[in-house]
Image (cartoon, one colour):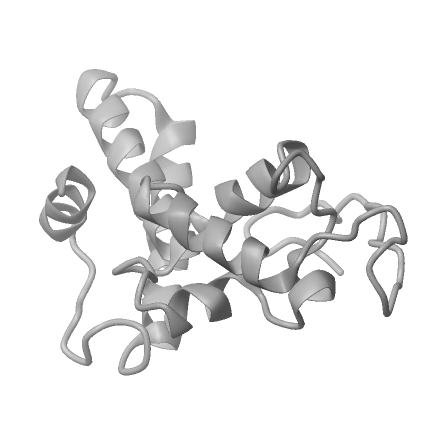
Length: 155
């Protein structure tokens, strides 16, 4: 399938191996994993960062290769159950961060046409993603603008 904002095709990547059960060597208790996920969220980590920390450091020294296989729930589901979910969806927040950085770069370098186009594409993605999340994950009256993004990122 072609990419959205370029004429190139996407590069193929590796697929995650299909597995129904956690590996035999990973015998971590479900409650311990959920407790560690909430603890890391309280420390300010995003769901993707929590997954990497559990993969690398683990719980009580034992790595957790896949939280959803070990617990039957995703990291965001665990956070939602424990009222520790982030205010904004992580993908939308990361795109807004990128749009703010691009706009600040363009303010300093007004002749950078390539990044002007990148800013247009990024803001388009933000608006589409905001439409997707509007009403469920974010307020129904949320509209994206640079000022709103700066305010959200500074918090």
